[in-house]
Length: 113
Figure (cartoon, rainbow, N blue to C red):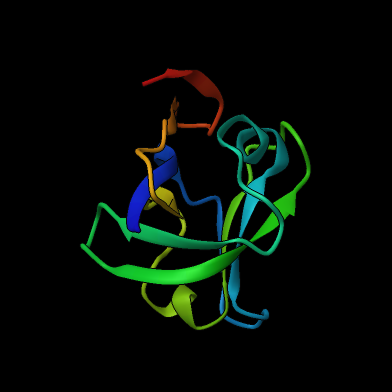
């Protein structure tokens, strides 16, 4: 068994960063659906501005809202306006076909990559 990339949202912009909230990342429900993220799923978050990497879990946000909100302790490191990638992985015996999307500055779907 090996870990494979299954889902990726590339170039997302953090719309809000809230330290006073239970830890997680809130992701626009439509974007999550496009790549196959589920509510409560563990993800790797990589901040392109400062190189921070952390694991947290998905909370589904309102569809087509453009929301990418960092919650809890992670908000001490990842701030509003930062660019990031959000990655989901799958443990499998076979290669997994990853669903990867590019989003624009307002977190709107641009294209599959």
